[in-house]
Image (cartoon, rainbow, N blue to C red; front, side, top):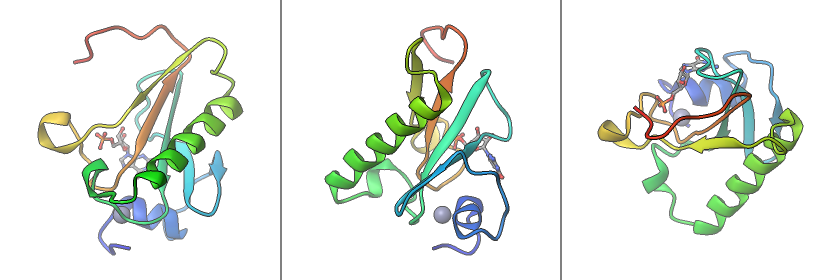
Length: 113
Ligand code: 5GP
Ligand code: ZN
């Protein structure tokens, strides 16, 4: 856990949020600045700076399973949704704690900005 990290603060409960989902390894909550009618972030409770810092690839499988569970809870599974993992500067990552954006509730465009 990193003391300066906002998502570690959320994971530890020091920064209160209304969780959409939580299990032993991951939690999900609404994005502060939503870019779609449904915009939820799934984060590992443990600090990883980015996707590239996870060594155990089976962990990423469990992360995707948590994403799928949240998608079902949000009821966007039927109409479709987008999962985004912004990584590093060029990827547009602004919070250096691994997170999976789930965006839904509207038709997405391509290419993204
Ligand atoms: P990134 O740009 O790193 O891919 O995404 C970071 C996301 O975290 C942004 O969409 C931003 O709105 C969201 N965010 C940043 N700080 C907070 C916060 O304190 N609470 C919540 N709920 N979302 C946050
Ligand atoms: Zn963190």
